[in-house]
Length: 212
Image (cartoon, rainbow, N blue to C red; front, side, top):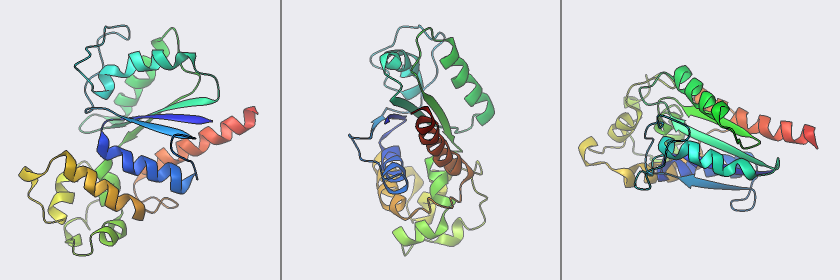
């Protein structure tokens, strides 16, 4: 099975790659490929709305990309990972599933997964991973935060690492992802939404094996 993963941006790539390689022993470009976009964006009014080529956000392009993947065989699966941010995760998931169901031509296998609140939530939930990546981090600043709490995860991570929030940008988030991801506990994830992402991938392989 080959997996195409659609994510919001470059900082999502290291963690997804880490999960697929370390947890599932997959090989990039042989077993999977990750496609970063330019932010989350918004779903278009219609699944058949014309795509604005200047808008490279994930949700804006999603209907067109799913239509484009509809020709793939059953040996392919599409995973869409999107941040909940301040959206209600149940409602967001419902909208994504509804979008997929309204397409006349659909990919054979699609998995929607939501990071609550954002990818950085997966990091601050795993204090040992943050400490391993950044030994001098002020861990006490995130110790009392419940996993997947909507608290402004990346801002809390920045503060923990001694960074001024107003000076942080995408390159900082990419650095954090590259450094922390290798230390995350992927067998006993501290974040529930990370657990569901891993569980979803596991089920894809189990389902694919049962169809062989």
